[in-house]
Length: 237
Image (cartoon, one colour):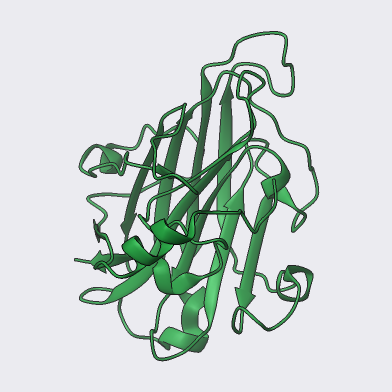
């Protein structure tokens, strides 16, 4: 699937003119061990984001996605739980084109006065892509993925990875992004009370789909997921 999806111009005009969606990221209620098991008590207190929209149509995706997020004084934590009948991971090297097979992603745009934004991706086989972009016109993604965020991640496949003949249940991805990764924009400011632009994204390549599905948490069907001005808002409380 291309990173630049062909979408409906009328929908772009309609949704881009509306207020951004808003989500809340609260302080973690306890410690989180990044092991891909989703069994930490702190996750029980987090309300999941479950409403995803297909890029290009705003329809619901075929398979469900749940995203939870919280933070402490060191990291921002994410927990993805994805239903998926055919879990597929094409790449096994860091900072490669993970969006060419099943993957979950988050984007951050911390400061709306500056064009610097960040992308993080984790595949079901726990391969990571992370990149810091100066702006959308600053060059190919290979230029910016040399940056290392210090992300920690773990993934669990509920089924058999890369075997299209059976039926899987899905996969779980858990990861922690150090707050220090955003220091060039955020400095050493605490997250509490801030609001950043944010998008959660998933690509699904199940064999029973007529075409690969890209889904996003933001109701902004732009032709490029890197058009960060269409992201939702994430409020750190």
